[in-house]
Length: 117
Length: 109
Image 1 (tube, rainbow over the protein chains, first blue to last red):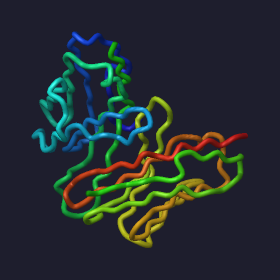
Image 2 (tube, each protein chain N blue to C red):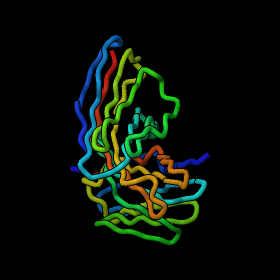
Image 3 (spheres, each protein chain N blue to C red):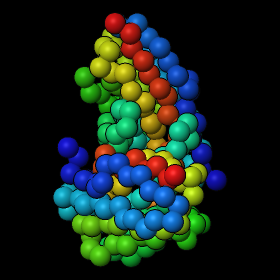
Image 4 (cartoon, rainbow over the protein chains, first blue to last red):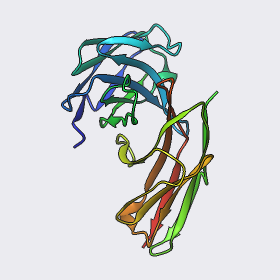
């Protein structure tokens, strides 16, 4: 257990569905992240929230919409997805990216395996 | 642009056969280099952080080292339970994380 939980663990949806992924961290961290992991490709950073404010978007399609209501919870709202969006979606948290000293290790949740039909 | 490459892409070892995984990087101001282990269908599990050239860290059969251009993950006398994908990532002063593609390790009994 890393202190980061994700639900659901598996999700199958049609291209016209709307669904949401949920992430919760119990580590007292101030930053949370969404990553996409496709087969044989490096982790792709999608969104970063630091102290509940979005700081990075990385040109993610608008069919993905993040929400961070507080420093412990992160959502990824999905609508009108494409089959190529099928992947493992990982949530991570870290202590504080604004620290000027030391690094900022990320701790990951178990992921949501998303299949878009 | 910061980049991370890892080699080999895949590695098969016999149990007890020691080897090393490589992570090469170019980064505009390194704050930290991380190693993670990832089992199939699961999230990456944090292993080590290295901060500066010359630093080494150990955990059980794993030892990570860092130079100014690359990092090595040495696996001594591996066991089948060490089979996983090992990911390297760098964190720069722009507060950006960049992950490598990983090395898929298989340890055969």
